[in-house]
Image (cartoon, rainbow, N blue to C red):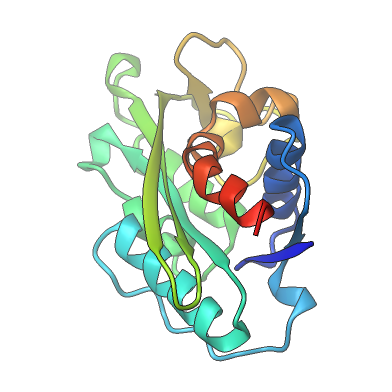
Length: 202
């Protein structure tokens, strides 16, 4: 059994990767989170892009634990805000991880934006670092539009105000398995499947 560290404490992200591996029939990989390993110092996210932050986090995790490590950096880009919050998505309102405050600030900042200019996109960069081996960085994009009022209880972050292209539901109204198939994080994680299959057979 290969142990794989997903450098997060977010239970929903861990569940997502486990579901994707199961759906693809990849066995022999045990997905761990940061709560399952000894604590280590995590460098702040200072890169100007998602890819740089994801790679830095995965490198730190792999060095500290000796385990193949995946890290992701994701966020929302709002057309009317010139692509922001972007890499600042998790701390847009000033305090890291305050989903409600972040979401409400984006809604306030776009309150005068016409509906036809409410385009937005979720972005996820995911990096896999194998100790003493290769580094792989991939990216997934998910386009849609913002709505004015949050809807749905699934998901997290900006999911309740994001309606994907071709959908009438917000991403927080979609079932987890539906979202896995089309979301930015699902697309990025599936782009790592060749490397994850190789790990499973080590």
